[in-house]
Image (tube, rainbow, N blue to C red; front, side, top):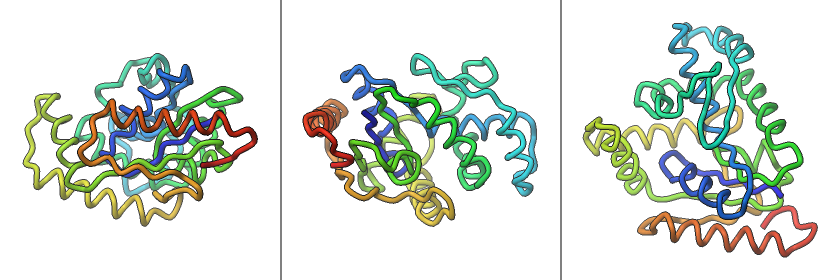
Length: 223
């Protein structure tokens, strides 16, 4: 069974999708990390962001692997590096590149294969796995997501003003919704969960309940 968890930046998708996969014994697929890995590769190789063909060509040569909740780029563990503000600022160049998206969608589908998977991102239920048996749209207010992202930065020892983080969140929302390929949308039939004021444990409990209902509904393609 494939469970898709889509939603805007800072909604906590990675944290809860990883925990949900662990509870269910499913494979966890962090697709956002794949775009970040391409962006990191572009930074390191100093691609010209105004020449999208350079990044597209590079993406086809990069070796991106997800294993044991870690992300490897050409054999190097870059899990922590991918969450830096510098990588976040340029990930849009990978996400907005049609050739990069096509390549990564193929990798995502190949990674899932015929296994039980929890996959999270922006377009998993709408584009990558439109026939997924269980679709979830995870969201929260922009203010709540900014506070969560600020907490992540503080954990990395990088202080930033809340107003600046909120502005980044609002910009990302506009970019994700208006993207020509793979825009952020709530997939048809997806269960929406607003998580303001909820703990991670509470969110995972709710998602597990949705997933269990899907498992008990033979032949159902979405919830």
